Length: 394
Ligand SMILES: Cc1ncc(COP(=O)(O)O)c(C=O)c1O
Image (cartoon, rainbow, N blue to C red):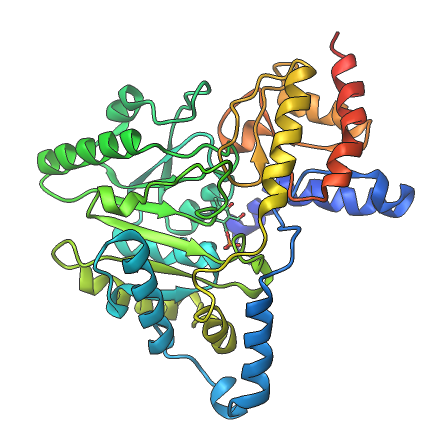
């Protein structure tokens, strides 16, 4: 008999992927340039040339048997060491290679981090709006997702609501800053209050609450905005990072879990991730990609187009009457829809070949997400479609 859980998931396919597939189909009919596809968070700029150069060098100069061989379970030691040194230098925490586990992107990192600090049946707190795949990640780890409702004015944490939801079934909280889909950045004040609350609650519970910090957009910040480093505020933090967005490498599936030596038992987390891998079939990211990223840890693609696009969309959509909490980073904007039913609103947008993602899957009603990792020229041409859409609601 087929597995019923996964069979049922076939009816809950990702709205984003479905919309993107629709866009590809529509592009065949009317031409790619005429479809304003704001659905998928797929970077639109090339990786840094230094990454490409390093790949070429590795292929030309290194022993192919070693280069294409199995990576050790926890990642290549020199790569883990380089990641630890880079994190320590940039964020001031005493990371060592023992606290670094190399993964297949942030998705792989989250799969391991979640399993390492929870038991099936536990509650996992997430904050709306949240990356819609968190539902599947939680389900895969046997966790119940508990969603803290959004403060749609600031997209910071509504602490009164969080406090009510910190039951004794909660073992971990998952944050994502800069945030997909809102583009909001948690402030130092928010992270300080969060750490204080978690310390207080952990003391009451007699066990630590774990914070999992999902950080694929760490470097994508606009107009000098800074992202305070969540793990610096709270000891029991597992950082989940990905090179998918900062270095435009989503297809290479590379990231890591990082644990700083700041709590008792920290040194067990990474070896446990290795054991988790055995069951999930993760078995390490590609050796050559690990080696190549280890040489460009502090570089990014040229990310400036995202800031340019954010500025255009904020200015023009505000002018059309959209209510927007200005994104401070990422390549998403999350305005209020012009009718309560976001699904209906996004269906209406399709009439103008404008592909927007309704907010319901992100845990917030009445908004939409536009992923502006597309050419600026296309953003500019899409404004007419946004205007026609807004005109429908006048
Ligand atoms: C918030 C967030 N977390 C995790 C992921 C998964 O990233 P990766 O491609 O590195 O697995 C994404 C991808 O879009 C994301 O937006």
